[in-house]
Image 1 (cartoon, one colour):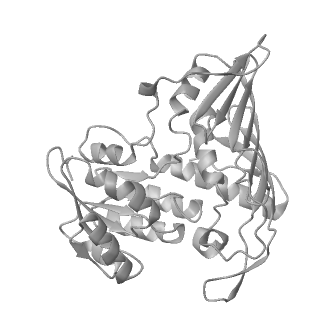
Image 2: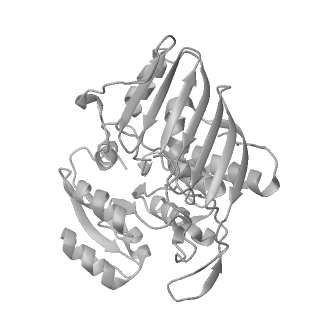
Image 3: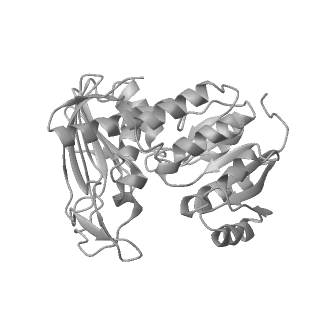
Length: 350
């Protein structure tokens, strides 16, 4: 399929849920020459509700009908991770461009299958929704590191705790359910994806995890064993040679807001995700100071624009391509293997 330089891009949605309603549907609709054609949700009723909300003409009861529809050029997959691989493979096979919600897949094996399929269809755009929380500060962090602000990066400290006490009576969320979320743990994937943008990938990991509530009830009242950790501590050696300590938790009440520190031989950088703030200090400074980021440098969220521009041949996917998706899935797999074995595990490379 040649680049659709001036043609209308017709989009179908599989799983138009909360994130797709907040971002993908309205932002795609706002792009010139884009038409929202059809939707398939888990139920026909929910599909009809969102179709009415966004002026989508057609509602399907089966996602496969979206994939096979001849009047659809691109598909936005907004479902849970356990469906991403099957749906992406089907969409690419049907000649459709794909924007797939994060996390990429259940595990790296599925991620690699998705990557292989996308490489087999180089004329089609394949994009994973990127980790959004540091997008506004990422360019500034990378620029400071590139200019030598920190010197040689020696250590990274990253904590993505959610600041809540353990919810012993809380219901089973799909993120607790390994059959739906796979090896993905809390917000580990989005923080690791962001960290890769700054300092590159990990080479080896050692992980310890905790499940504080081993059984939870689902919406029907049935009990399920919880297999996805509610807390994980990771020590990692980065490919660059730096060391990293990463912590992600849903059980550390009143913990500090999520942030990352990059410690170098000549300087230190602190990234505060919630405040979208970057601070730093260099050898000889007594304290950190905020590093101003001009508004024009705060690129932020432009996922749907990038997707449409890539389809039109105007830019390449950077946030996030399938290669980087596989890289964070390989990290996710290595963390799981390390926690289960009690041994350090190498992170597989592409």
